[in-house]
Image (tube, rainbow, N blue to C red):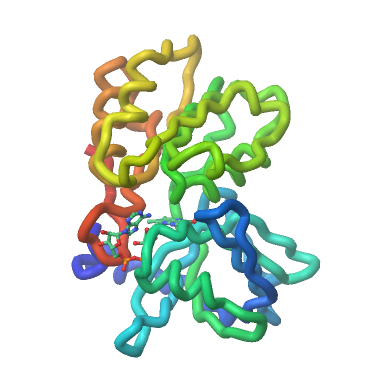
Length: 249
Ligand SMILES: Cc1cc2nc3c(=O)[nH]c(=O)nc-3n(C[C@H](O)[C@H](O)[C@H](O)COP(=O)(O)OP(=O)(O)OC[C@H]3O[C@@H](n4cnc5c(N)ncnc54)[C@H](O)[C@@H]3O)c2cc1C
């Protein structure tokens, strides 16, 4: 759903607000920048891996605009959380992350989000592009070692790979765009088409560019997965400013 059309969200109880301060920022990979933030009251925050915060992101023309970013990690005792920003261009969020320096202040609300681990599932299938690495890697880090996992992760190239928990490394397929721009494509859909769905009652987490998410969701439903077995959400799409797209048809 676009941020311009969010009437249902307004009916929900307001999300907790937090004032955060940048501790440090550094590149995790050439196109992914991590910003670590702290807040006096942050030890009161609880969340589930996969959930995101709504950032009041400074805009070039002044004021702020809403942007969603996933909690990549959280250290309650140190009152620190990290978020990873894809450096996809000169838009407000990557620009802010590039220049983030210790002491910078950021207002956020949340956490929120339904793309979280379904513990009862027999197996877990993750699909997403680089905007989803914070969510998928954090979810993988919290799964038990004997979890049955399959992940298809779309990135620009091998320098975008990140460390995956050793026990799941063989279950992760990195899919490279090899020079093409991020956006609508069939790279992950093609991989899914060649993937045999495991036996048992699994759960799929399908996130990323909206049209890709929609196509992958439909494909999994056509293959016999029930709608409730698929958590899906459009994290971005060309031309959209902030917001998120529900993909649940
Ligand atoms: C729940 C949720 C969690 C998310 N978590 C993360 C996260 O942890 N890390 C992360 O990097 N992103 C994440 N995203 C995606 C991020 O919120 C969007 O990419 C957002 O639009 C970025 O804001 P911006 O200021 O860069 O660009 P905007 O001002 O929102 O967009 C300007 C234009 O940039 C283009 N654009 C936007 N995002 C991308 C992109 N990723 N690649 C290429 N072009 C793009 C579009 O054409 C858009 O119209 C998440 C989104 C959701 C809904």
